[in-house]
Length: 361
Image 1 (cartoon, helix red, strand yellow):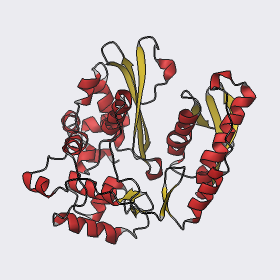
Image 2: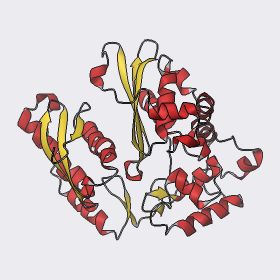
Image 3: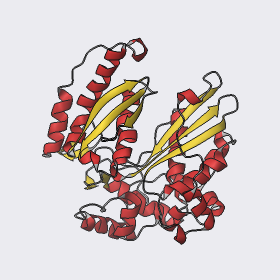
Image 4: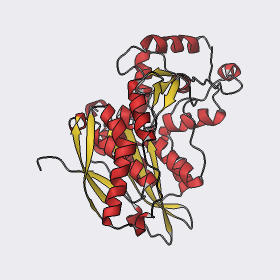
């Protein structure tokens, strides 16, 4: 992000970000506080962000809040500004902070200039939904064919972005969703969706909540009566039986050799009863982590020409080395935090942290 293109406040938050970092279970008082954590973006797209907050249970007040940005620099200023504004507020008060509020506070919000989602607001909304046990917002229709295979973007996600953010060009769609930012072969399909939406021929139902959320998270205007009248009455579910959803969460064409290797590897994973993590000894813990790496994570990493190796475990800190394409990949840190660490926390123990040992040091 070229700071000269933005206000002095944006430059200050970008160059000297506040509340940058993370909070873990060790940072809270378990008797009176809870740890909230939410994510936005996707590691494969290089635009991931995570927010974590200490919440005092008695009055739902945010005692501390931090953010981590993995990818482009644009979300740093908004993340720093939002966390500075949110600390000390109640959860409901923080949720009322909108893109317009950040735009005013920063004398111009970079994301609004490029019609991008404000990721810190999206991640905080995700943290709140997890805390309230509310289902995540649906961003695409499950099982539908993809428009962009490079970045795994569905047709409904492209249409939602076009309508909710007022996009009119392929370039604008690519900046907002990453669709078309890879090999470009999907550009004609995106053009067709743009033309269809321009005619008011919509296929995706967008709820009032989605419009209101987009207004809060991305600063887009609420729709007029004409657009609402053209809104389909119910979601359109398109199930393509020739698609496969692999354990890594990606959707592949049925004929994809990558999907076949990932699925075969997952099918070979042994199913054995396991002790709870606190009851395992050191060797059992290492074996459990290695098992997760081998069967859950390496197939997808190998498919991209990389590899990951477990070096050691110190308390709850997992040290690994990256190899192959992963060594020079600009998304390596995102892969570790939003891929490897998140999976190990979800499947083994929520306090695990993954750190890379850079070879040669």
